[in-house]
Length: 68
Image 1 (spheres, helix red, strand yellow):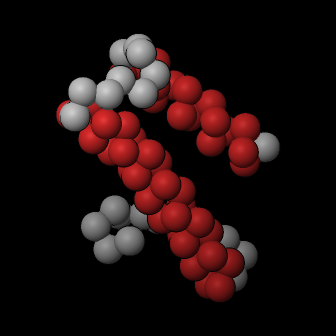
Image 2 (cartoon, rainbow, N blue to C red):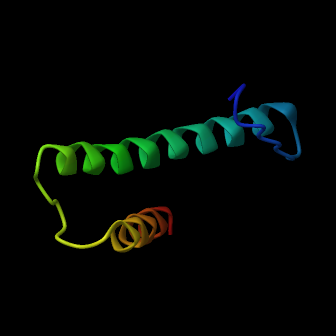
């Protein structure tokens, strides 16, 4: 979290830390998913057959659905 500039406000310091850790975990998952697809493209495999913006939107939709 040291390099992200994250600022969290919550009722207690413990809850602030829990929220910050959730943000960090979510960022790690998104980063890994995006870079995993890039690595597939580098070796010639197109995982979705469409442009990066479409894949990014699909990933955000999947994350939104999982958190709902």
